[in-house]
Amino acid sequence: MSKLFTPIEIKGVKFRNRIVMSPMCQYSANEGYANHWHLVHYTTRAIGGVGAIIVEATAVSPEGRISLKDLGIYSDKHIEKLHEIVACVEEYGAVPGIQLAHAGRKAGVEVFLQPESEGEERPVAPSELRFSNRDPLPRSLNKKDIEKVKQDFKSASIRAIKAGFKVIEIHAAHGYLLHEFLSPLSNKRSDEYGGSFENRIRLLLEVVEGVNQAIEGRLPLFVRISATDWVKEGGWDLEQSIALVKILENKGVDVIDVSTGAIVPDVMIPSGPGYQLPFASSIKKSVEKILVGTVGLYTTALQGETILRNQDADFIFYGRELLRNPYFSLQAAQELNEEVEWPQQYTRSKTRHFRK
Image (tube, rainbow, N blue to C red; front, side, top):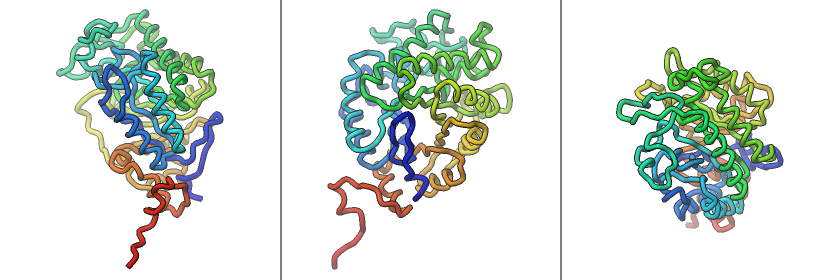
């Protein structure tokens, strides 16, 4: 049997294969509410055979949105439509997951002009440092703000459970709030949340603890990190990532979703298929029990199969390829000579046999 289509079970949740739809913002929500676009978009990929779907970055607070079009889970009113999406994804065999996020200093300026915003009319961050010269100066979070952030993630997790999600992923990558605390490039604090490695990882660990309390340790917990800031010195790097993951594997985290970058602009990144794999592989080889996911412009079944056979990762997160082709997983199975269940309605298309 191929590795890509080998099932796996985590905390009683069964994944039919190792193909995960990576969370990708659709910027199609209104006031945080999911709609028909999200329902069709995610359900189609479930029909297409993926093992799990991680719903796009979903804001844990109004002020934590990247844009006004972000999905939200900061109100109980958001649960109903998310539950409908979850039900459809599960009906067609995929595990429904959700990525919980706070944009930090990368939140859209227009977000703070809305009446439902509870924050000051500036993005928030560990320190008053702009993402770029084109962005507003963020407001540094005080202790009360930090407590609110932790509670927002915990409350969002409770809502995610009510919506029926089976995987929770905490977004601590791509220059958003939790990554901003991790990186010395964006965190210049002098209190217990800044300075040393132990201090900079403190907020993430506290968020993980709160989320685990909410889900009572019963559901798979993923954390997405940027394994490097792609700067020569002074940033977050692989060595710190490995140290963090070794701690997280003893804090109830089941899967590390390894990405990179986006804490500062204008950084040269050698992007291409598998460009982030060395980071995932290094982490995989440095830990004992935590599972590792890799993402990075993967487009073929063979790429995923090779990675798994080389034991460089445990899950393959496909992104843009699943935007282009929602039935990628079914085609991947054929390429690897795997017999998987197709939707009965589509079985006539399994082979390209034409009657003369």
